Image 1 (spheres, helix red, strand yellow):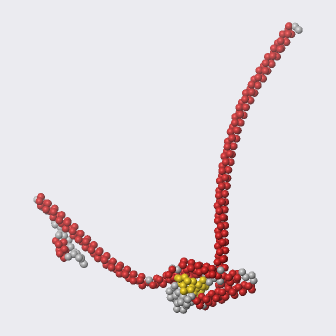
Image 2: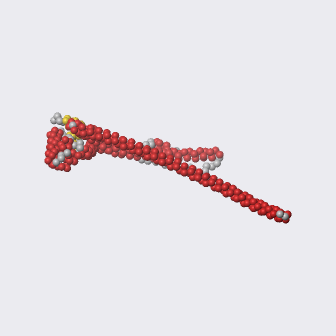
Image 3: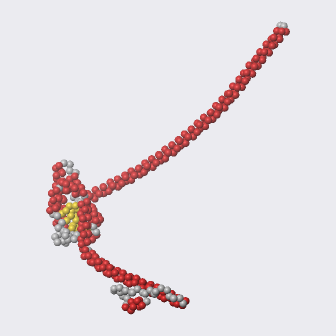
Length: 367
């Protein structure tokens, strides 16, 4: 190879090396720019990731707070519901105890009503409670003995008329229960006859035992301590009720006896007022005389006040005259003539019915 060719080859090699270096430098610059862009992108991505992580953390915190508040509120509601449930269970428990006590009392009441003697005592106790709750103690007596030797459950001490009135408690419960529990018409008719006979026998007994001419009123009361028995009697046994009217034995229940006793209390109050009417009239007459006497004394006191006023006026006139005389004495001592006329006293009029002596009136006129 010739030297020219070698030179050409070297030049070509050198040119190619320069081009490769330029390409390499361009590639290095591109790589550097790409790396810088990637770095900026990585930094931006890192910021976004941090911001996203912060937002996620905030949302997680908010969600945790909401869950906590919700759990606390739900816990409070559950506690309140449990407390209300506990209170209702306590009320139910108390109601169950009351029902148990009531059932025990009902059983005891059935035991009392199944015994005739205990049933009679039950009616007497109810009668005693009603009478003592309405009337004053002086208006009744329990287990009072009449002149015929009979002892009545309650004797009302009423004025004549009507006079002392007897109340006797009767409780035909057995025949009434048989009447209510009759399975057919035949047994019901038989139980109705038995019930009517029992009530009629009580009416006759009260009439014969507790209506004493000249001692008690011409009527008495039969107390039925059951509204159901009273309603059944008046609804379906009208002949028995009419017989009680004829025998003047009035049948009463707790409600009607309460109304009757309140009416009797009003009658007793009216009788008491009539008894006290004379005393009240005498007191009113004395009060009228006292008022008239007070009016006269007030008039005399007014006259005394008028006389005192006149005396005070005369005293003031005398004082004014004395003061003027003293002024004239002072002027005379100084050698000056007196000024102005002397004012005379007004005539003193003691007026009618005065207690001032004549010499006092004269002395007052000379002042």
